[in-house]
Length: 159
Ligand code: ADP
Ligand code: MG
Image (cartoon, rainbow, N blue to C red; front, side, top):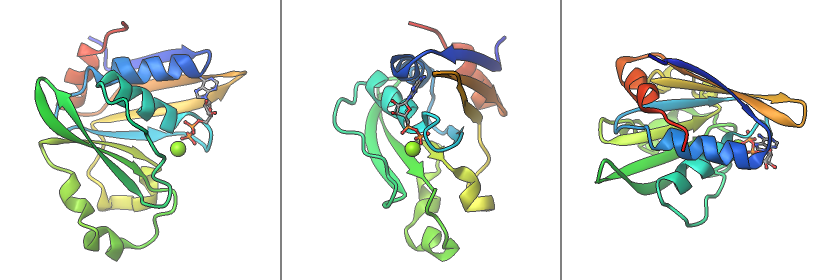
């Protein structure tokens, strides 16, 4: 059983592919934290994930909006997928006012860049993804923390 996956990503294509393969393993209700410095490839991974779920529209980095909502099919069901980038997050009241709390529910999937910026406002991660620079490429590590997260990583399969 694989609850901890490490992969070498030689180029952007490899990050997109990991995103796509990973996305196909996701189930509704999971929360994924994306860790790594600026430029590590977090947004690229999300773009790959959305492409893997057959969303081929534009994927914008939600740098100023904090979140970008998408609708994707997960196990044949329309599911809300929220891509957060909390790099510029600073106001806890804004979190409540914007209704972000409701984005975390058993029917949605949340992929979160810079989760630490919102402290304890965000529910804990089912899966932590760490991206790190390594030469010209990247190293990715996926770690499941919960039963739901483990179920996903067990289903993870390279296409
Ligand atoms: P982040 O969201 O973590 O700040 P981005 O996803 O915006 O980072 O990616 C920053 C840059 O890294 C992009 O130009 C992207 O093409 C590049 N990149 C992504 N994955 C890889 C990789 N595995 N190897 C080399 N470059 C990559
Ligand atoms: Mg980003």
